[in-house]
Length: 505
Image (cartoon, rainbow, N blue to C red; front, side):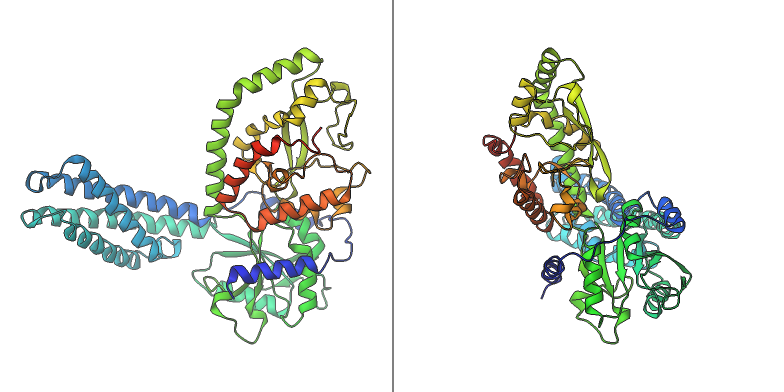
């Protein structure tokens, strides 16, 4: 079974098992609160740094190949345009070969000898490709040697610079992956010492959380402090920027592990089981040995390159949409100002990524004196608080257009679960978390202006618990099946879904 399929089965199993017994309010003790405050700023993902090195390589190698190919023009008859095309293609092949050989990992970049060996093999591949493709004829051998020299010089120079830079990134912890150990004792100590013994390890254990008392789980485990219970861990991970939770309970304690996962699956982090907690091995496909053996259970839905691609889509489409829809927004602002006194815009705190509050912008659709910043009273059919302009812009979702500025600021995404007010309630005055267990699990990704639930008709008033449950299930489907194609599909479906304004008033 593939890792992705195995994780999907485990997630379904955790959700089907139901919610754990109610926990007391998630408050943090002084030590956990202090540690969380120090970890508010996220570390830089290694992929961002290595992408910079890849771009430098592509630029240097491309210039070297262009110079060599352009220099061969008198004898080979190539024009400058073709020389540039060949140089770009050769640079892409070279960088691709280096990437495939894992030469851009920070651990490899800090070892110049190993990095230069991979560079030499990749450069030989590019030169062989160029010669076979007729870039250099028999009368331009000197140009080929010149290109080889330029490639070698550029590669050596970059590697000499990359080695100390990569070492600094690793030593300073700028690109570290922050992890929390769940479960103390001997298994946790094995894990921490095992990671420390690996020179290529980029995982930093920032604390231990365990429900057991100090008699069964010591307050200090291999130099790492126990910060609190699992209930406190959820509150801790809402503040601190954590990348991974590692469960070190014995793998034979299946029920305890399942109970933990029921509490932790709502967090937007990777959840892994430590293979140090077992006396037997697992299939290689289900473990990661880059910095210690783990069994991946729950994976952060959108991270790394996927997150970067989604962000690029947000910036491009939001910028184009603001430009195209600016006349509509200006006319809407004018209509609101002419109909009723009060501000044009309405701001409301809503739950964002990882349950953190986000101040969302909207066009005002209620009379100013009836404003409800906390969202305690949901808008219902024929609600007297809604103005005439407000009723129209709500049905057409024009009131949501100012949220494009939230998208540009990175607070929202174009597509995702719709953000609800911090204190949102149904028409029956029930908190959403009281209707749907694990409701905050939809905050594992950034909220969006539109979403899978909305284009499938689940928008508007929550006057029936089934409506909220359907929204929740559609949001989870989106989170578990996210892709750029799905985002594009939802964006394409959104204008059509607005034609059916069922539930929006």
